[in-house]
Image (tube, rainbow, N blue to C red; front, side):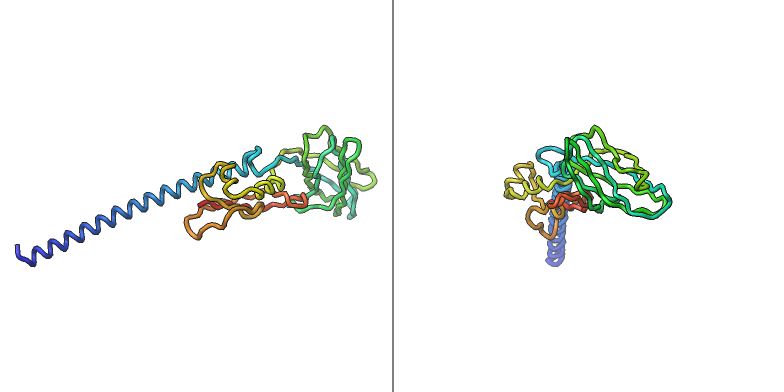
Length: 236
């Protein structure tokens, strides 16, 4: 073998070694990134479940009740009517919403173990409208439409009473009173996280390697009204 042949062989050997090291290093990096991504995905799923889908002392949701009522105009005329719903037993935080969860201005009075919710609503001839009365409290024993149908020309049907879960303002405030490390220990989270919208909490995430999960849910506001919002949780 000439010196030239030896030099070429040595150069090729070096190239093979360098390529092998780069290939192995790339595979290790890819395997690590895959493992890290999978770990973050699992942690994000656990956080979503613990914070927003489980009603316990650690989650951010509280149980409320929702009464769905259908009102029907029966006089074939357009008019504004005052509607009144009586709920037994007495409940708290009662608010009235349309089907898009826009709040309808209402008056709420509690007396003799009952809560009376009254509000004005406009109707076109023979129109049907649906409203939702949301409140905090135990299951009701009676829900009555107490307006006089022959006078206001509107009848009602109580369609359902269901449990719903809201992102609670009081639970959010409790979370925000904790230090970041206290909250991670409280929930048992091993990764970093931030909640945006609904209940803003946690440090700003880095620009890369962040898992983002989004959920649409009903959020209790500071004034105790409810809005539908998209809540993001970021994990890294």
